[in-house]
Image 1 (cartoon, rainbow, N blue to C red):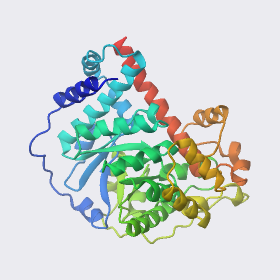
Image 2 (cartoon, helix red, strand yellow):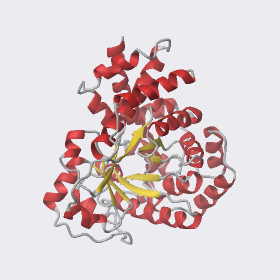
Image 3 (tube, one colour):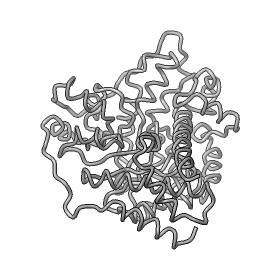
Image 4 (tube, rainbow, N blue to C red):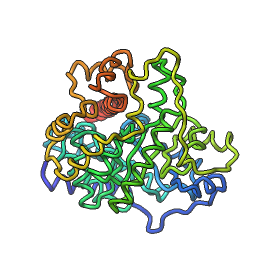
Amino acid sequence: MGEGTVEKIKDFVLEEVSLPEKPPSFPSDHFWKALKETGTVLWLDTGDIEAAGALWCGEFTALTTNNTLLNIEVQKGIYDELVKKAEAILKGLDLHERMVQIAFILNAVHGLNLVKQFGAKVSVELHTDLAHDIERTISYARRFHQIAPEHFIIKVPYTPEGLIATRRLREENIAVNFTLGFSARHNYLATLFAYPSYVNVFLGRLNSYVADNRLGDGMMVGEKATLSSQRWVSELSKKTGRVTKQIAASMRSTDQLRDLAGVDVFTMPVKVAEAAKKELPGSWKSQIEREYKVTLFDGVKRESLKLLKLWNVSEKEQGYVRVLAGNPPSSGKELVEMTHDSGIHDLFPRLSEEELGQIASNGKIPLHSRWEARISRGEVAVDSLLNLGGLASFVSSQQELDERIRGIIT
């Protein structure tokens, strides 16, 4: 696709949404102000403008969207006419490329609408086709940045190629939210190698893995991993002078707000934020140094879970990351080979198409019994399985969004 079309798309997006010269202001809310004073920055995890508006106050600073959340908004039909207009400037491109470009336009326009409404930063997402493509990830991230450099934070998924792309984007000072992280070791690697603006622990899914697979009550698995990751990431940021912030993502309950107070960033679903004001007293204390206990059911073999990998970074893993950061690979394949050559086989496991299909068919939470023996042998791990399941889930939502676009333009 030529530079002329890229410029047309940028102009089209900026013509669709004009930002006010002065951002809107919102009153303070004592409840959220007290939480913010523990050191936690407050984001809402939604693309729904009306729902966010019912909660928004001066303490909120950003919103985060993803393929699933954007798909919910697009399926309402609110952008059908926009899609038709956008298609008119994409003549000459094949059908799939038009869908990818229109998905980019939808992310950018909806992101700008959120900026316009709330004066906030917005975390926008790339098409899942780019998850394993370094150059296209960089290209599209630059395009988002050019549209709203002061407001857009680009989400890049946790893949080998995503790590390399993020490192290069950060060299250009482009803000990156490195998403789909599930452990301290995930984020240790991301922080030292790629130094993204933000890393994540999808804590609710960690709890669900243990609970849904009937391995334990599922309590505090994600919370323990998040707090540990926060400490590792903060220490690395101090040592390197390149600041990466920890996000507590995939929050499911109000208790998690209380139990994780002090973590750098919360991305709160609207339902959780609404319930918090009803259920919690509003007195907060930083929990950064807490060490929560995780309980497994009787008879569950701890070696079949290896949960320690979620909140500990071994000496071998630390050494591997230092080598990787000092000798950065140029491709995802090379990065994976370096990982396996270091004796770390479960961080980026080599799986067949059939095995990846099995993970996708299980949804966001993989079936533990299918992987128990391989986890025990160190061939895969809970964090890597959840990462692959999460990416597969985003691909499914992206496909639904693409089908909506296809139905309008064909």
